[in-house]
Image 1 (cartoon, rainbow, N blue to C red):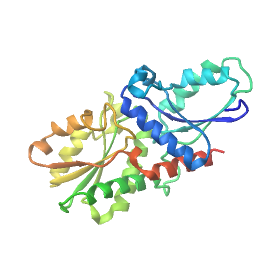
Image 2: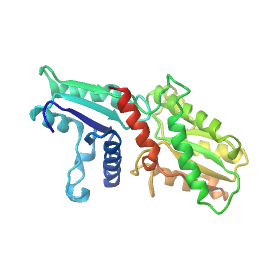
Image 3: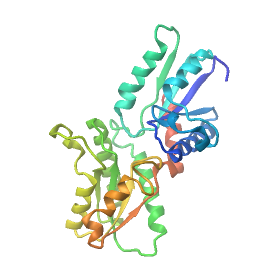
Image 4: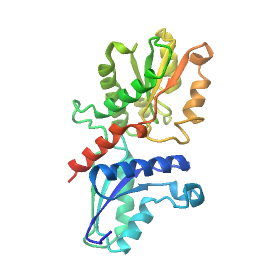
Length: 279
């Protein structure tokens, strides 16, 4: 690219799993097609530790190194589209901190950051709930059984209350959209930090599964607020282990899993919208 061009980055948190990097690359490629401009898949952390031979011979980029290399090449204008649901500290704190460390005393370097996917200030914007609904319907349509089921919306859990509120908002929007097609919708965190100051993450997933049993649900579907397969979501991840160990499953309850958000074509539409809104 020419040094005068704006460098557009699709930024995620990063993972040590190759499949997460491949997923990020696919989403970036599809976003590139949607906006007609080159989009670079970059992670904040971790991904550069994956050997290049596990990534098709192309090493993963992380923000500090990517930014430094581009600036050394003469690029001064950057626009980041966050692959984040809410205002994570990774975007609010770590990204500007690392950027400032790399830029130092350089003048003329510009960084614009688009909004995350959930717009908590505009509660009528239910774009993420629409994505989850689409993925849930896809999953239910492939099932032979049409028995009623409940929904548990699960995210990682966050030390930032605003992020948890984004998840709760999406779950409420999803419940409204699904209506009587499901038995109900519960929002849950995979994990949380110790201490009452982080209680906004409750219920944890294992508690949400117990709540489902108490409500008499015999069948439920997990709706993931995760973009890509990795250590937590996807086959054999932490969430699968939590579900398998739950009393809900041990008592005969059935748990289905909707596809991850990175699989939705609606995600590309929303990312493109956030990009254009940032201009």
